[in-house]
Length: 137
Ligand code: MN
Image (cartoon, rainbow, N blue to C red; front, side, top):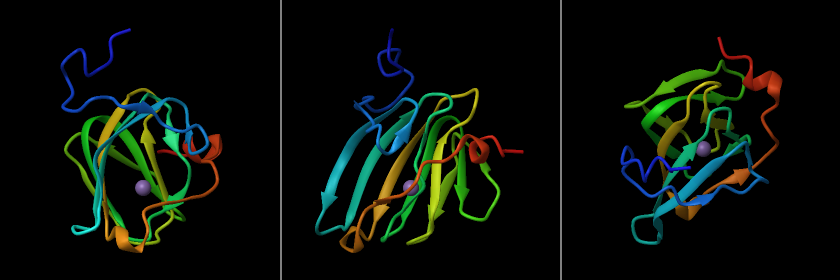
């Protein structure tokens, strides 16, 4: 199977398969900028296959998602799922519980820019249930 990168329609290498402890379904993570202790930022590229998502989690320093391909979902605890698409920019405030992933029928790729990393990068929480994932309207 050709990867999206080999097919030439993505910018960055696909990277390594995302850890199953924190991702449901198939996702790929490529670290583009290791945590920089001067800039206090870390950048990764994440590819989610259809149906894949990460666990609920928080970022003590916040995060910015830049969707570069496909259609996906973003949800903050207590709010409805937002459909996110190529070109969307999603700012996530520090300590807001949330998850992100692909939609049911489309893969989704985003850049994940972790900011203020001197405050912490990510705290992983429980899985997103099928009921939560399927609650998209
Ligand atoms: Mn996040």
